[in-house]
Length: 147
Image (cartoon, rainbow, N blue to C red; front, side, top):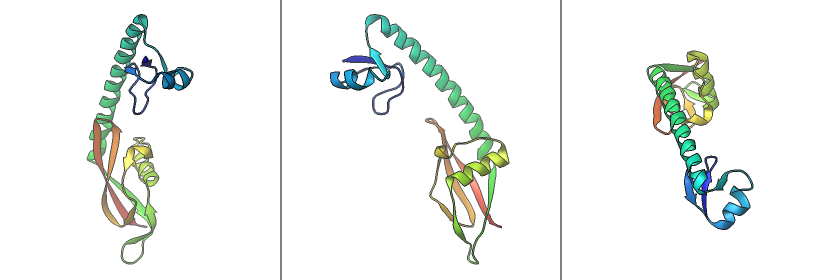
């Protein structure tokens, strides 16, 4: 069955895409939950307007993500933590700690789910990858110092 997606569906497509799915999946899940509508001749033009608005919003999101990236790449985020004599931390620095420190030091709000790293367990300089948009991925330099 040909349907038009009304919301982004992982593994299926994005809002406004016209896709072919199994009849049962469309009838039993996508249509009743409002995730899709049947692709008729009139609704195809509606899908085109959905795609245009999605592309416009996507361009704006990409532009704002690039602005944030250019601001954060040049900064060094400092986090204080307790450590032992060899520089090994008691505990670790987590994604939430990094997101909070970025917001506190640069006034840029980043969700912890947009950051990717292994837990930091030692003093020193570390790199955290931030992915604010599908096309915008950049490193954030984090320096962990002793309290």
